[in-house]
Length: 207
Image 1 (cartoon, rainbow, N blue to C red):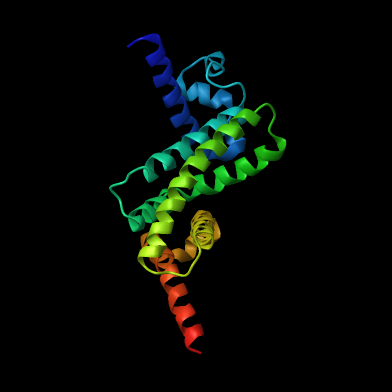
Image 2: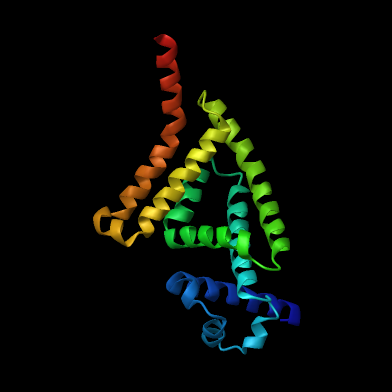
């Protein structure tokens, strides 16, 4: 393995362990000292891959967004499968969905020297949104729904983020029972939403 390949492999491992520590311990418990110790690396070696903890957080968020982009590029899957994959990506790891959202919001106002990473993040999201919008347009046309693409995508995001918050809440976890049944119910609800919108419109026209 050449030096560049070794560098990339080490970086992938750093990101993997950093995300694990972040999700297990939160921002307060995810220190660079702890990360270096977990990886058995000198702390200085970490700075070859990122310049600060804020930069590391942004790289983790971008890494997650790239995973979502690769998911929607799978043209073999129909829209309902893509929707389920997107929601389960968040709902199987609700702590990641909630924490990444909180960190991004904080860094958008307090982050130093990471504006170029926000630009990179938004470019990845734009690519993903272009694909998602086309895919959603075709799906809504196929079921003859009157719901707009904007409203449908906003509804899916709202359902997913709200569900992630519930699944991540220690209070609500005591009363949820089986999480899998909730995840399935929420996906079914998201898929039924534009069909319900069509029925509502037909009823309104009839009256």
